[in-house]
Image (cartoon, rainbow, N blue to C red; front, side, top):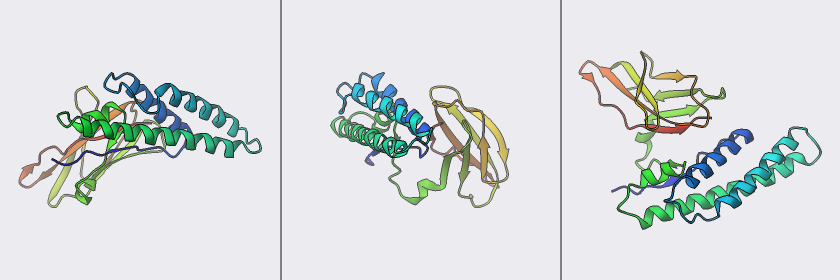
Length: 202
């Protein structure tokens, strides 16, 4: 069985990063499986609040405000990395449980461990809030591609098929975690659905 590795897909923009950090804290705080996180979630929340205030001040372009904001962000990044290590420890200590489910429950992502082939299907957050770009390495002999997405726990929603090996989805809920998948139509018929790719939409 392949080892499941938890990773953090941290947004670059400060506002999005703050929302992501809050999402991780909310996910872990609402799950009794994460009984003793290190550091404590209350501590992480205080650091996020401090970062949020520093970000507001940085937007005024006051002298030294951006540097102070960056220092606060580094603290929160350290907190998130520590929480990721905690989640990874739980995975190793609970081999009977599905590691990917533990990672998803913490609001994090699973590292692709099978190498470049798994990167053939990618979901990328776009600058416009609630919009993502789906693209796949072109399938040999493909005539068209079918796409589906769903908010976690809900039914799959079909998107219009495309001739190109990519499509765009707009109007998604910011702060929600979605799953995406595709299949290709070839002369031999429809392929199976791909493994879902999950993304926290911002």
